[in-house]
Image 1 (spheres, rainbow, N blue to C red):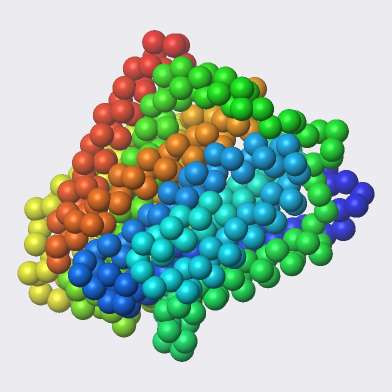
Image 2: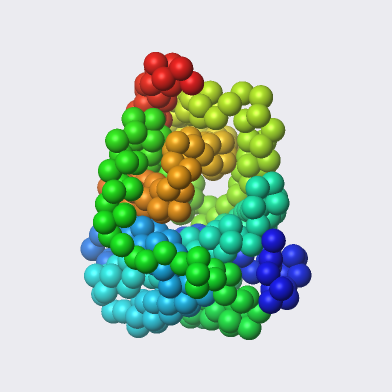
Length: 405
């Protein structure tokens, strides 16, 4: 239960946590309409390198995820959130002023490290104040609010670019993060009492790492989570050039992205209903099997040669399915990984998120660089990731059967 110094209403608290979550989504999805202009100005010799602006941020977020949670356990929630937002703001300012793609990528890496602070520690704040079903209810409502941001972010990004140019996107990041920091500073008290803090000991982290990766079911679920996230990152890297160059939908891209995002947002609600009846492993395995079938069909089609709008409609369905898949797999895979790690839940959550995010960014980066004016490289990569994930889930079933689960 919230302590007596906690004066925020529940609605205000949910909105604040949703804003903390949204810093990451806004930082990724609002960049999509800016990539062509950034490529033309900073890397005209190889436009595909602009996609690294997204993966460098994700890579930084993975690195930051590993350290933000343990640091907040040692030094308090507010301080680490504030430091993370500070790093994020300074990095956004450097990206705004950058004159080379190399400086931009370094700034985005650091921006991702900073964004991990509010994103990861805000979950710890919820855990400090609520428990059990009450915590689950708060997180569910936060996620419902949060899903609106990715849907509308490209539209907001396009509006900013049209009015003020692509560099203004980074000023918008500064303003958005500053707003979150001021709101937190004025209204959210420290939620971790000094007596409940745990010293930052790397020996404990190393011991936890050993225990996490010694468990075969945790290892496999982390690998599958990595592949599922790599599929999501791959579509995010390629969706803008596909809309612009393959289907000539540059003007309507933000609106289609919004529609797809809103449709896919219902996946979390569907998962909440299905997972109770079917179980986490079955649901993930079935979803990956469906993705294999869909991707195989897409790989056999030359969508660009189909009469308009049939090829484009098929790709929108494919994109929606990929986004929908994330809602049916990522949460379940994270729960599978965390199930045997309850006694070291805090460190385990940071490790699982950091490893899967970092590896997924590494897998998706070369996919983004392979764009050749068709959807084939994307679909081939998605099919490969889905097949590997499906085989790993079958192996996970054998592991659980041997363990009698």
